[in-house]
Image (tube, rainbow, N blue to C red; front, top):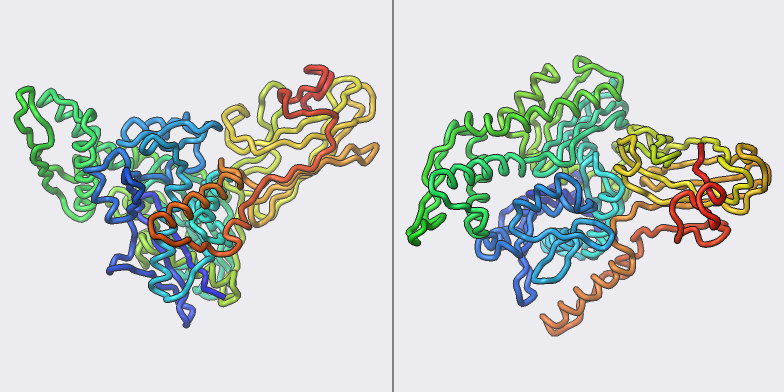
Length: 572
């Protein structure tokens, strides 16, 4: 059986690793590069470049060179952070029929899953070239605070890339594995993993004892990362350029791409230097067509002032995670840094001040997640048994009640697997069925949360309001798969639904994408591309088994065939 690779699919950079014959994780490289820029460029003729080659086209082919796809995957187009990203990105972000954020490339709609699949396919080819064998299985990491839709969308991207994704693993958990937090002897230790990458931030509190990792709390911000530091500097320089020269660079995609790249390089330089120089000749043109150059010194202090609001956002998730774990900062034994933005001095200073201790720097923050994923792949394959993982739910899960309120049944940070039970009564006389809608999120307003699905129990026995009772049981397994059963207590009649998170693409759509890629490859190379057998056999689909009294799908929530109230009033 071929080896299983570990992949850190990052916002800015991605990385792939594998366990060697001695059980030690190692990063796989190509041309000496240990990380791959998460950039994909689509040429008009159909050719696709990934990584460094794609990043070189960010200036000449800005509208079709995609970066930051991780910030869009599994997200709705109308969310606040997607909206601001769309306002600055040189490529077009559009709404899919279901409201997901997609991209328009050369006039055609493309999902973020397809873009991410290009990166995963490139990482897979790097692994195959390095190992000299076919690779079809992977463990892929995601931020701990990713919701179910984002996790499933990542799994779909793996399927499109021809990978059998054995597990979607939380990045902080992977990092803790790679740091070797479980090798400190049998004594119990409490660690905090502070993970600030290119596009996301999360913090996890773990208890490690006798080779067992128990995640007790997690929190974060899906819209905070190194890209935001770049954006703050970029917006400041664009506004400054407009004041000085009366030229709006936002109307010039090429100029914006050059300036964005310069801002990122300046940030990297300022993580170790006090100041650096920005030199961009012919960045714009005056009203007579003459060239306007950008040549200015920028200091770390200036960038820290511009990004102070971003740094301030780091403490609240840390505080919430500690509160959820029932711990104080003084009870944390170690703080592990993950993600390239943790190199920024102001970020490290916040971590040290908040937790009251210097964080550990025992691993490369750009590689540690992929190495941990490779270690976990070894555990799944039976090649290693040195650690076991216990994880938690990242978001509240509950149901819609009354006039649109969200009732939490499984609180976030519940240990997996988890099971809960709740009873409901009918809300109207002779109610014919109940339709229970399931949501995931943090808001009391159910409309602001993500709908997971619904279970419908029909053919209820007649009776006065409140006389018919329904027992609802929710179970989430270690793969974050939610199973729901509704049973009417008097007759024992049941309806059940298994909800595997939807990433926005159906299995049919994924199969069509793979078929198109296969055809395009055959046309380009003159031979058929042979995908691994069963490449999409693990793609989850929603399974619904329910006894319905009519077609509930065409009616509104908690409405029966005879209208609101009589058909399927809300649980109370």
